[in-house]
Image 1 (tube, one colour):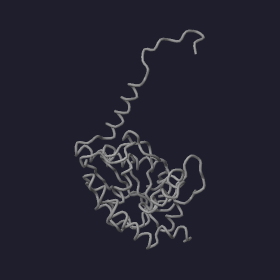
Image 2 (cartoon, helix red, strand yellow):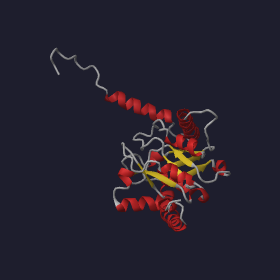
Image 3 (cartoon, rainbow, N blue to C red):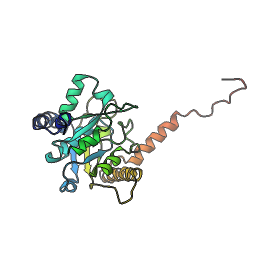
Amino acid sequence: MSEDLAKYSAAVPAASRFVAQHLIMKPYVWSALNVHIHGLRHLDDVTEPFVVIANHSSHLDAILIFGSLPRRLSRHLSAGAAADYFFTHKLKSMGTRLFFNAYPVDRGGMRAHRGMSGQLLDAGVPLLIFPEGTRSRTGAMARFKAGPAGLSIKHDVPILPVALIGAYAAMPYGAKLPVPGRPDVHVVFGRPQKALAGESIADFSERLYRYVVELHDTTARAYGMPTQADFHRAVALRKAARTPRDLPAREDGES
């Protein structure tokens, strides 16, 4: 293992993360939210490395996952973070690494860190990746990018699916802090997944998407919270309300 990769599983950084996560980050977030954790039994036989995936609609998401996982699984967990946002300034980079053991992920055609996800998995480091690629602005899930499914197949590691319910309402896009009143947030761990025999990366990725939606909606319905269908319906209604209607036809030559 190279020196650059070794730091993601080294003892001293892991001890520093434990202090940052469990004495600073988790106590604050758990005091601001009413966090409910489901499905921990599905993690009993999981060992490193693996890839955690989840829906992504809030800056709370990574904190909720790190704080909800058993310590044996979160100890070396490394979160993929946008290189062009989290790693362009030294202070921001240091904080991201300290709290989330983060590694840079390229976006928008960048290639400087290509292959790092696979290298970390091969070195035994588990990953947290949000397969939508960015936070939802509306709470509605976008289709998953195929990267996590491809990593699972190529490196023969399981996917740990997670559904986050209520995180969008607790701290929606653009908010700087969680809303007051300790809103309920549910973290649901599903069964570890691997590709079926002959299953393509695209098909596996689509199956993972459907499974996370199922985890989300089953819990949402049980607790009277919005389902993904509700979020998508709200998006469609807002879009329809913004669509110009009954506009006069253009005259010839009018631009």
